[in-house]
Image (cartoon, rainbow, N blue to C red; front, side):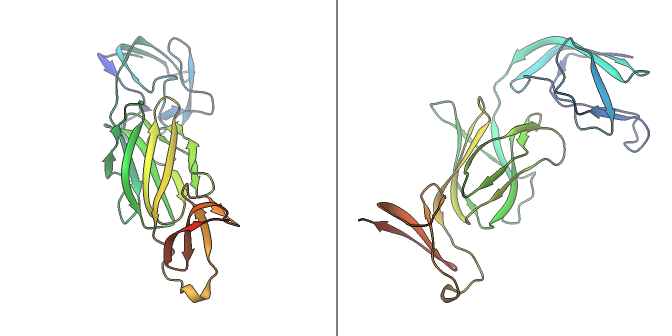
Length: 232
């Protein structure tokens, strides 16, 4: 079988039209598809992603499918494009489809200057304007607020966060796929009386600190948080 088109964005599958039949072929365990190289398909696999295809569309694409061996060969001319980037998260009763546009900075990174994350746990993706490119698959914690995401496709494979509830700025570097959360203001932990818990301290990067020394910290006691200055 052969398909010729005018343009192709990364992320596609082969299907018999029912989405539940025997023909539902996608990406297997092997690495992402490479232009001009034979690629093996897997039953009920994920979306097929083209290697090094984050910032490209494929002009004049041609896909040749060998249905007997379940392999494909993709050729075409890659053309670099510039994406708008969005932070899409399941937080504060949002659904993942609700995207917040990130603003491009002079250094080439993208920033969401302020977002309230009222829950200690949630999920998110960094996605292009039309969901053709998506990143997730890793975990942000208060101990590690900067991580390298992986390119994912279709449903699932969200990135997770397990953090101090509060106001954050979020930056995204599309060249390195690094996303960074920065705590601006902690809101504490709801539903726990202050007198029942000991104070916990975090630096301004959201990293838990056992013994604060010189500097400014966020002190969280139950559902109360405050910035404090420590000098020795």
